[in-house]
Length: 307
Length: 307
Image (cartoon, each protein chain N blue to C red):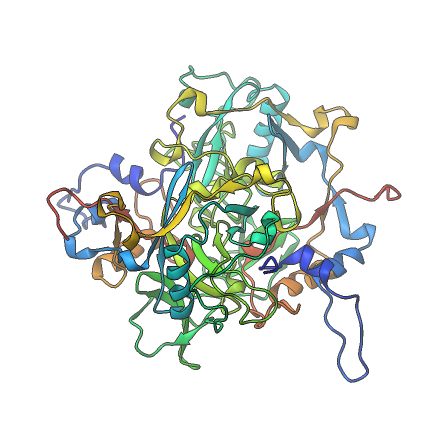
C-alpha cells in the first residue's frame, strides 16, 4: 500500500504539473505550487534583535519574539539572553500534549539566580490595544475569540467590542510562566506549547513569541513523570547549552531563515489551499480552518536572493 | 518563582479543601474534586474484544476500537491482531505535529504481507447514520461541524441536516491509512494523531479508535527526516513487539484501566470545569472549550471496586 495521508509538500510534489483541459476549470494551485511561485517580497527575514537561539545538544531552536505584544517581557528576555541567564540551565518540564518549560532555578534544586540588569517586576501583558496593529483577520469562526487572524506574523485574536488584541496559544507559542498573581512573571521562566492548542490560557498569561524553527527538538523530549510533567531526576533534564539573542551571535553563525509574510495575497491563497484541500486525496474539502491549524512556512532563501 | 501554569490535577491538589464562607457562594468544584467524588458507575471498563495493546520497548499503548463507527475496519483489525500481523514490524513514520504510523511493509523494504483471514477489500467508513447513536452534544460551537460531542466515549461530530455522524481527529485518534481511492484502506496500516487536531481529515479517512493510555510513548518518538516524516534509515524505526487484542491476552496481563463515561452528569460537570476554570490561577475563564481540548480521564479502579 502506498504511504497514506499525503499532505502538503509531498502531495503537491507528486501531483502532475498544472494542466488545464479544454472542458474544465483550472485546478486551484496547491500550497507547494503557491510557494514555488512566491516572490522575494512574500518573505521576511527575522529581526536579529527579536530572535532567540535556544541551543540544545540536538541543535538549534529559533524563537521569534513579539515586542508588539509584550514589550516589557521582550525587553527583559533580551537582557537575560544578552547576559547569559539561561546558559547551563536545563529544560525541566515536559508534559504530554501541553508544554515544555525551563528557567526556574528552584526546579533544578538551585538557589534563586540574579536577574542581572533585567527588571525584577513587570506588568502582565495579556493583551494590548488593537489600534495601531496590522491585524489580518481570517473569515473562519473561532470558539475562543470574536476574531482570529495574524498580526506581525503571529497567530492572534481580536475583540472589536473591547478594542483589544492578544496572541493565541497555538503549537509553538512561547510564554512567560507566572505564579498565581497576574503580574508575577518576569520573563526568566519560559514555556513552549507542544500539544493541542491550549487557548484557555489566552489572556491569562503573557505570550512573548513563537518557535519558528526546530520545534521537533522540543516536542520529542521525554515526558517528565512528576506532577505537571516536571522531571523527577536531575539526569532527566535536558541541558540548555545557551540561549542567545541572534544580534549577539556572529553573522556567519546565524540561521539563514525566512518566514512567509502573513499580510499578503499569497498568504491568503496559502491559507485557502489549506482550508479547502483540492488535491486528489481529499474527497471533502473542509471549508474551514482553525487558526492553530495554519503553519507558517519558512525557507532558506535561494542563493541569488538578497531579500 | 513557583512552577507556573498549574493546570488540572496538581492545581486541584494544591487547592484548599472545599469551603463555604457565610457571605459568598460555594466555589465550583475543580476537576479533581469532581473525579474524587465520582461513583463506580461513572466509569466504564474497556471491552477486551475492542481493545488493542500495542507493545513497544518503552511499554504499552492502549487503543480502544470503535466498532460503532467503523465495524468493517474494526473487524479486520481484530483479525489482523489475532493473527499477529503487526508483530515484529515497526513504526515507520513520525511527522512533527501530525501523526505516527505503522503497518506498511513496503515502507520497511519488505514485500507485500498476507492479510491472513482479514478481508482484502473494505468499504470507506468515513461516517455513519446518526440515528441509533447515543450522541452527547456539547453546547460549544465548532468551525468544522454543525455539532460536536461524544458518542460511546469518542469525540465525534454530527450533522442534523444530513443525519450523519463521524469520529473527530483529536489528539490520540487512530485511523486507517489509505491511498487515493476512498475505499483503499484495509486496516493494516494505522496512524495516530499526535499534534494539533487535523480535523480537515474528518470524513476523508476512516477513524477506527482512540489511544486511551500511553500516548506519551508515541508522541516522543524522534521525527522522521524523510518526506512526511517517514524514517530514512531502518535503524531509526521503532520496533513493534506486538499488537494484540486484549481478549487474546491472559487476564492477569491486561491493563486494569477504566475510562470516565462521557454520557453522565459527572462528565458534563468535568467539561464545565475545563470550559470555565475557576481556580485562583485563572483570571479569565474562557467560557468555551474545543472538542479536542477535552481529555477523557482514566483510572486504575480502586481495589475495593469490582465495577
